[in-house]
Length: 566
Image (tube, rainbow, N blue to C red):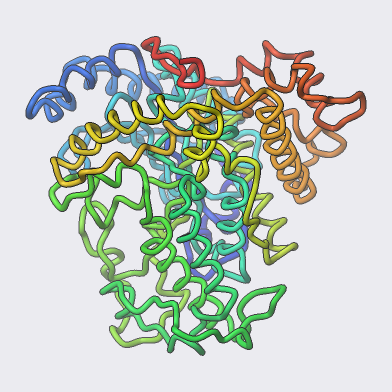
């Protein structure tokens, strides 16, 4: 039975309210994924045939496994509940199957509170290309600070699929999460988050994930970098402030227009340190307009799979393609807009007056900021710590606003300047081969519409990395390590958990770093010296290497070779 003052019930009355913007009342959407060798191969076989994708979602193995995992979660929960484990907070669980918005069967679990006073905790388990995926939302942010909840996630939503033969990986599924947008729309937090990621492309390429088009980093190409930077620069010039742009209305959101930026700078409307000046509504309007403009003018430039954009493509519609970015703002919406996938009207009973001034209270109750650059997670603890690292760093940004964009970093050699790196290192012949391959791939992906030898930035990362001298690789590795350590330390300064006091803040995150960077730094050419911060990190990694590696998911279940090893 749930205790009256249990922290898992204290926040349930208010956490979904759009106007409750503090982190205590934020919520999270979880999408952990698990695969098997068979699920991956089935997708490969079915998707290679005309009309085969639909058959994949109807395959007996996939449907049986989906049902098996859900049934075993219920069976295990009921057993543990009878044993009176503290992490079984719910009085019972109900299991049924339904269809998602595409008519694909999924399993639904509803965990019910003893007194029925609060809404059920809902978990959905379904099928995606190559993988099985949970959809668990909205989860109160406060729950992730509760050890019973983390144990609840581990025992039922990680251990059950793993026991059934499913496991996370890098290449075939992710561990992305979303956070309620309302938490990001005060001060200059949203702009500072984008600026930080623009300065630190390693977060999506060498730390939390590996270079792939599903969560393409914002510095991937020169055009993409400049597009994101231009939107951020316009923000600090006051060009998204209602004083410059005009007061946005609900109609701007419903028909998605008029987000600016305004043609003229209005820096008088911005505090150079804190962000927008004005009322709470004006701050919200400024940040909402910035987010919507970033989606169309920043995220939309060279996102993953951009060649495939087509109105009839379910996964690559022109109004959806920009989501293939490290951060996704496609669900930054108000009541009355249409769902980004199903097209259904959002929060129909809360649709505002068409000409009403845009206000925080209008936010769609599942409006979110999504971190897509997250690899599969091997445990609920690892998922929780990755999430809270983002949250605590966001809190640090709130205390240290206005992140300046860095124009040039060493990683540019393998990102926007990768072609120059190949030429500089005598790889012109390889570059010609890549262009021929790219022209063929672009034509195929675009159904003949894109005649171009434009090379995917993820391909260029590894091609340029391979030709760099070891000393230059080591310098890039140092830059990456230094940036990540700084992020972890900043986040740790905002972590109020008792367990974090006097703890090594890197201990829960050291394994996230792509192991090839440790290998590069463990070379004489790296020039590390005793007592150097990076040297200390390298020694910590080497002293517990097997443990750290065990926390990482495998790259692939079907022996696909890692691109950095090709």
